[in-house]
Length: 123
Image (cartoon, rainbow, N blue to C red):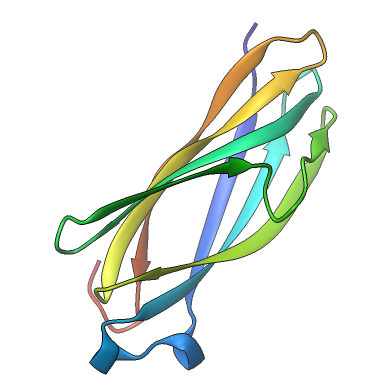
């Protein structure tokens, strides 16, 4: 079955938590997941791959997002915000959500790679 979900990402630097002298660069990412398909599904898990400028990779696996496992009927969306801290001024994130449809079919919803960057850094 073809699933039609869209993932949109907005990234903002979290300047009050960023301390360059300690190699701490904090970012907030806002995610919107929209179900453009004809069947409902629930988000069960998340998998993030976070990479900084040095090539250091951190993987994050967990249940749900921000303590929730949202259920998305056709036409519905879910929005949440979370954060990430890396050791360089720029980095990338990508990953996937583990989903299950009403029929019990499990599938992965890919999260396209996006850039973590301070406003003055070229992308």
